[in-house]
Length: 293
Length: 275
Image: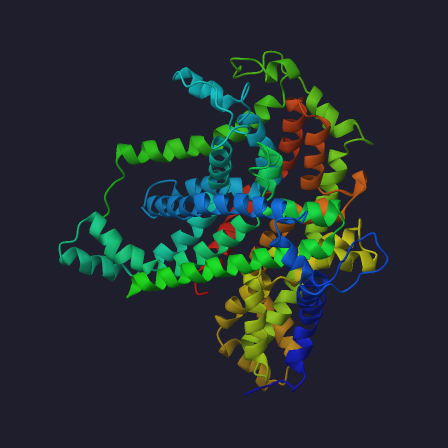
């Protein structure tokens, strides 16, 4: 039973497809086109330059290569340092929340709360908490005799701080997804493992982790995407410093595009970053599949 | 078989709760301090002379830092955005879940693929698009472009797939058309999903930081997140004022969250499974 005309599905899809074409598909293609032109926002002409914008990024003598790769390095360090924590900590929290205890729903809501605040509030809040001289974190650590640490002004502390803040902010989000995944693992699998005499750790390794593999792939993917997009935390907390060590790729891209008006160059940068991200994602998938067999 | 949680378990739960709550409390406490007290060493836990000066500064200086205006802008943009997402995504999700047509698989796969394209790729071209549409520094730039995201369609489709066929069949026999079935039978049965998508879209738009920072210029047109970064620039060392601004931004969403947390959490949970 079809019950609808041939055109009906397309009519239902039309409003979405119009928005999708204009604001997603079109811009994705247009961005590629821009990256092949000298698209200076202020100049009248936008001459075609072929792959020059991309070549410039690999030419150490060009003005854009150095800041771009510094940005890529900051984004890369942040990603490598944060993704393991952003996957493991939420997993631990989800296992904790998966137990039955009074107030579970309440605590689940509390742990998720930071995420609803958004990066602007989080950034300002931790800028103050992490301040070297009058931040409460150093005051607290001082009680235990820890000397003042430049959380926002010294390396490697600036990266430690950015990773820790991001974990604080987003752990609840990933934990809720893990929790849903945990509740999808059939209880019989645990019972079978118990009959085989498995202890808690063995059950976690042989039942929980394999059962969570699809969820983990999903979480790793969205976390990689989020890390590559890192911007607000570094802009508000470390202001890209010390030096330019935490000036992320996206900060460089927006600077070149919106402050220096060289949007073709900025578009080339964003496509190169996207390409690197795709490669990283594919390698990750490959590794995770390997473990399965 | 269920073991009762041990004391160590409760210690962990309480510590984690403190870890979440203390920074937020510290932000609120600081907003009632004087500039001097906010920089005192060692810090005071309770404001010695609590004052609403910082709140006065962010809420009343009108022209310079119109925090209330920013909040209103954010609220209006996020609400309109959420409505647009829900309308457009539920229609598309319905077609993709319940109808048969030639390019269904292709269209759905294509939409799904864009879930994995990083947002920064769209930044430059969409900025130029806004410029050409005359939407720079306007409300439309906040409301419309993000409404084409793949998540809403994917989310609604998953929900519609789970609605039993029998619900529609009586109406089909009565000769109802697709629009009637959609509005009279499908949508009323999808209320929880619609509520969840509304809340998730609202929050995402309310908290968006990068996009409003670059497409808005006039101080009176900023959203709260973009405005807050301006506030930090203007009051570099006046932490009570910055914390008051952050508090004004945080409290309304936290209150909203208390009422709708079930939808937020279920929506996030559902987005991760059966992908």
